Length: 570
Image (tube, rainbow, N blue to C red):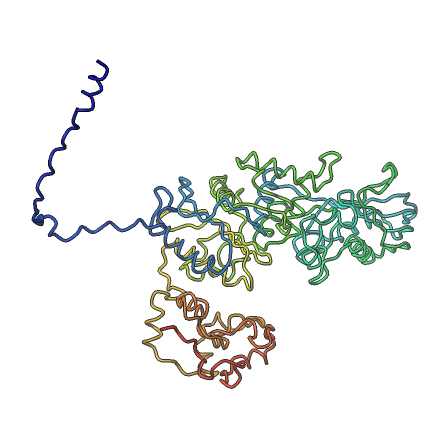
């Protein structure tokens, strides 16, 4: 049975597969639709549109982006910019608005704003004269003490002098002081205590970086140099005023009592007189329009007066930060180290500066920052915004340090609206004049002014092929081709016209970018001599010689004699 079973399984045949179908040759018949030309793919989206804000003018945004890229960013600078429409805070343009950059002198806007709000526009600094000792028969048996109250205008054209204090002592019929003249400063100590930590050594040596004390004199500067210890200078001015009233002083005028020194009880002191400063609103107007660092530092210290055991500078910094927070800003996103902006620790963003201007414009007229700032054509804006039909429509504050040029303010567009803007430009090398020109061109574009491009980059090749090389102009022809503004001012030679290429050939690659570098102003004088590497002298003789035609034989070695004009790549 088992054998039968195995026998049956072995005899079972596997299934036969079905035969394959016969091969049929197919004939390809083209579809009518395939005979039509292929559809064109839509162009890729413009990457520049990704940066355009909502409801903003695309053409304006892209135009400003192009100007920023060509005129500044591609030259190695760092730009933080924002433009707001003040009536609804619409962002019309921005470029890295949240990048923290140095504010330079635009820092004064925060300081003055806090000072006017916290201290009031009628605030005044006061300098007091004390007599320590008894007065008998027209003789003061003791010292005269001059106590400073932090007045930064003392001894300047905008502030008081010492004559009124001498008059007050003369009214007491004092004719002789048998003692010393003593300077008393309870606000600032000695040495480095007068300078913020972020100030550089070079800034502290120059007149614009003069330190601010509780007792100051003539902005604490001697010519263009800073006075490390100006308080004895105030005593010398006091002695001179006393002599004019025939009051003699037998002692010295070099004793200084600074913060931290022992002065003893004031019970024996007699108040002779007090001289007040100008009001804070008047000081603020000069501070912002002329960018006076010492006035801004004086306001900064005034914010810290009478704030406990904390130093006056630290108390002023804390009060400024508290005011910034109450205005709706985030002080932890900025660094406010001093009052004038010389500190390299200061950091702000273009968004914060533009918002400050926009909110200030909605304040009470007469108490706003824009009421104290310079307009185009005055103050630090005397030579700005020449592309605008009316430069006075711009109210702004400038800021300049080495490698930093900023502009913050508002601009009225007649018949349209008002804009708040902030242009923070850092990281460049060389003169700030091209950067200022770039900022002015941005405002002209916002105003709708049709500008001639600084460089026709898209037609550089065609212009080079179409226009034959021009001959070197003689001195008289060059002078005739200069505008009035391009002639030398006070010995400056940066704006004079001469050869553009300085003996260099253009690269054969990106001709448009090279055209930008060599033809921003044609013809023009080199700011640095190409052979010696030294900046040319500003004497009249050197300026006159710089206008002479360039001799091809004087080019540096290795430069062809026919390269008096830059060669364009084919």
